[in-house]
Image (cartoon, rainbow, N blue to C red; front, side, top):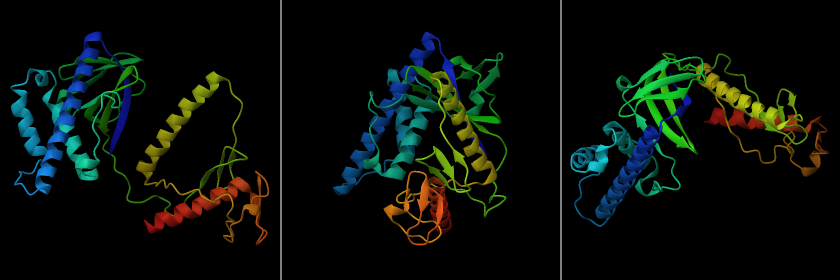
Length: 298
């Protein structure tokens, strides 16, 4: 099973300049290759004989151009090949004219090192580690947690003012074919009377916090969400997003829909069958019913 581990890098000025340069080169390769593909499609649509413009042709042309163009030599060959592979996948998924250009002000610089033999990760202490990447050398990063498994690739990207590395690791585990309890499910509703309600009747309300407490809770919730998603893959759990329309006005037992069913923010009382429940719990039960139906039909 492949799992990603993201860390904040601590680059030297020289390394930061190189990363910015690599990002610009990858963006130029993407845009040039995309333009080449679009021109090939247009020539084919006009009836001209044209060799198929795919990854293998463009990778060959890139290798030939790299020997002539000095600016291309600055970047490692593997990250340029990965850019072409990403473009090839995007064109197959969305169509050549459905893929967007990478504008300098819109695109976040990113490039991937795919060869695990060229990637070395070591821990320096309790808070710091470093990894060796082609042409960048040893790069320090914040050791927030230990990567688990064998490193398969490393992706360097910039988000705002900082650079990060994402290590893709193979831990040797496999996603089970089905959940241990395949009939178990729970619906979740972002309520009005309370912050979150579940179809089991659990209510989770907001509490007053200081700004620092709120920021700490945000970080912990993010870690908890990632942990839950990671448990979704390791246990075979499926997360289904459903349309929330009218879940707060629909009676879960009988299906009657009416605005009058929502007697107040916290009270649901069906005007047809008389069913009474906490309004947000009833909405969560409707969410569960829709998600379960959608899961079975999918």
